[in-house]
Length: 156
Image (cartoon, rainbow, N blue to C red; front, side, top):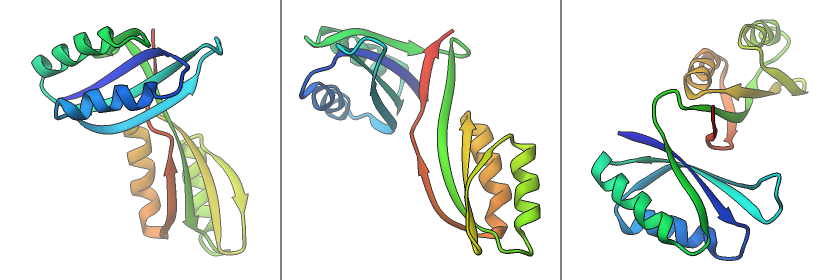
């Protein structure tokens, strides 16, 4: 089962390594990891998506909360959180296919951030299902490269 966790930590050297090490030490595979400062410069938020069973995750969260620099650890269940991801996609789009690529971008409310004679770079923001559906429609044109931020989540 997939779990999205939000961990509020003190913004200090080595905290991310301790948190990630705790998960790997308990056999969790990290699907997505995102770390950034919050509105308070003394705190950072780690958003992590893991695969694992519920019992193991409950134990991991208890251990996580015991770490010195962890302020809060929350496992988001169901629709408890707003979950988004940012993705940049470089797709082949010449003069013959560019209009069709732009039409797909309009449907998904994405933003073209760079255009060249042979390709475009598109900014996509949304949940994982939106990103997956968008990529599936772009595959026939040729995806040249892709960069993803990983999941961000905030409690509703």
